[in-house]
Image (cartoon, rainbow, N blue to C red; front, side):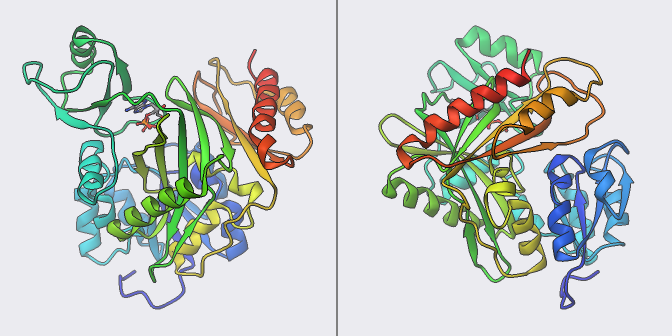
Length: 384
Ligand code: ADP
């Protein structure tokens, strides 16, 4: 494999074998691409769809070197990598898309915030904090975040007072953390965008995301926004991807305040939960778009095929090995519903076990209401 790649890319190595890699299967087949997976366990979802898998931790660069030997390019479904070790691989000719230079400023949440601020994007006030004695200008409530390895709200906590901050920080083992102002947002939004090797950018409709306990529960596409806000957010996505010299799909999470101010929360250098609706609601899913970008193919269509869509995560609510067949059948029977079950061997509270997308057909003014009613229907079947 070498970085002056001229041959068509046909074999892609993916670091990470969870549901995000698993959902690339259909697109890979369509584009005639083989997938090779590096993932910790042989029961991880994407193992079943891979040409070959290597079972190793995500940050094991020796395993990535093995995968690289089988593939034309390496991409990511998980950003918990060891960048330093991967840099050595890149120096010996392994092609990464997105590149390691793109990942470098965004893997640490504090560095990511600095990067976004420095390129002029609006972000919440923030600082890095690593000593209980350092004076800090933020007021309470404030949000403390682990700088790395946070996901689904693990590593994000809202703190009410200095006592809370100190106790929680100590319980985390006194690490350097990101502290930021709590944003009393009106809505959370997300935008999925892909940048291609020739600089083209493809943008999906902006969505409203709803989190509970910091975990995404449902996504409504499209979000109800003015044309002005839509343009502003699309411009944020362009600025970010261009400054990162990104290649591939990126998920960007934002806050919209009551006063109509947009703030960027974070960016993920991979396919994203807020883009799952695209599998069933768009001509080109985020998974196909990512593979297209990584292979240097032309961008696919990103518009919705229906008036709207709602995606509901099916989160584990108990520890067991049930496959919930009866509930899944009832959910799949909802008109225009598409259920995706990730085939995980064990359910645990909060674990993402699957999702369902329902296509919506109401008038724009009634879409959000329809989406909320359908998610309520799904959640009352799913949760006991
Ligand atoms: P993760 O990387 O685990 O998804 P996030 O930074 O996205 O962590 O935080 C998870 C959720 O926590 C967000 O979707 C939001 O609901 C809430 N949250 C995070 N930061 C803030 C903030 N500054 N103000 C208010 N809520 C926040």
